Image (tube, rainbow, N blue to C red; front, side, top):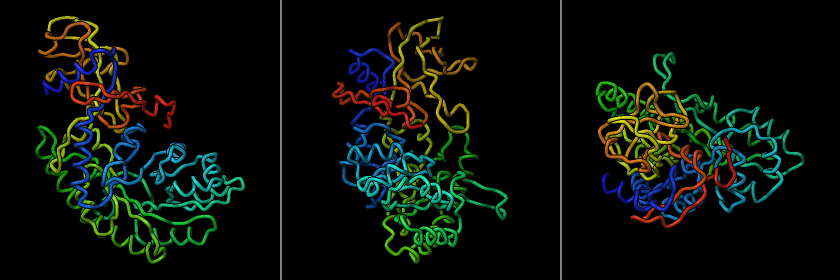
Amino acid sequence: MTSDRARYDAATAHLDAPLAIVDLEAFDANADDLVRRACGKSIRVASKSVRCRTLLERVLGRPGFAGIMSYTLAESIWLARSGFEDVLLAYPSADRAGFAELAGDPKLSSAVTVMVDDPAQLELIDRAREGGAQEIRVCLELDTALRLLGGRIRVGARRSPLREPAQLAALARAVSTRPGFRVVGLMGYEGHVAGVGDLLAGRPLRSRAIRLMQAAARKELAARRAEAVRAVRAVVPELEFVNGGGTGSVQQTAAEDAVTEIAAGSGLYVPRLFDNYTSFRGRPAALFAQPVVRRPGVGVVTVLGGGYPASGAAGPDRLPQPYLPSGLRYDPQEGAGEVQTPLLGGPADDLLIGDRVWFRHAKAGELCERFDALHLVEGDRVTATVPTYRGEGRTFL
């Protein structure tokens, strides 16, 4: 890590911090590892975890990657108009203007697939068409949560209401008999497996409990997903894809015969939340630097800004991690601040005014909502500076 710090400092010496970088060697190595773990199944890149068109193009140019999983309809349309030909919107939308645009443009309607898990969503789309007659490509979403004790205990994200194969088949029939729509895919995101680390530092019992839960969840879901796919294919034999998984479950989900492609994105940047997995180990590729602006006392420095919490249930794991130099920690009375952040630890005494502290964000693409550019580092040089979504004036959520 010391050599990485020296490289990053040297590469960005001509730039003023705060700034964000992506280490391209680490980024590419992480992409290769995702492909290896996918065992021949293609990977659809989750754009919310990247939020930079240049890097989306870079990874989609590599063997083993195909298509984008987007997070808003406006983003989906923007990406399709930018030349991306296969965009799956992973969340239902209420963007009436976006649906009118989609229904009125044959290029867009062939490139974008929207998510549906309720007949009311079809009604909304039809009311928004404004005369647009293009067929809308539809993906159905399976609820992947694990339910125990007769459903009294639920483990997993609250997403789709469609849990049973018969429910999915019924909606597939409803879509198929409705003019202007076509079912082309089925998706299920097992966030309680793909997005929850099973190796928590200093918590062996909880780690073991998570592994037991995930093993049970994988077994239950594999059987139910296979049944759901059979049920939907009985209605829609020409189903184009079945998407599943995430960075933390690539190899396990790829082992399911019913799944045709894997979703992943965070594994390209490898933010701090992905340090706690027994199944893989990635290389931190996306980092940001904050400058030292104060030295309040022995063992303390203050950096500018840094209060960039990630989404999800609030807790210390949602804060950025002081990464380089190693050994720095937050002041528990202040944490990561809006305008300034005190950091404690022995390495603080070796930092001078103007030096940099490198951080890792807790979640992948959310870092890009704080910076309008990413400096791409190769070796000890910045070889390109590219805009994030924010840098292109696009703030979709």
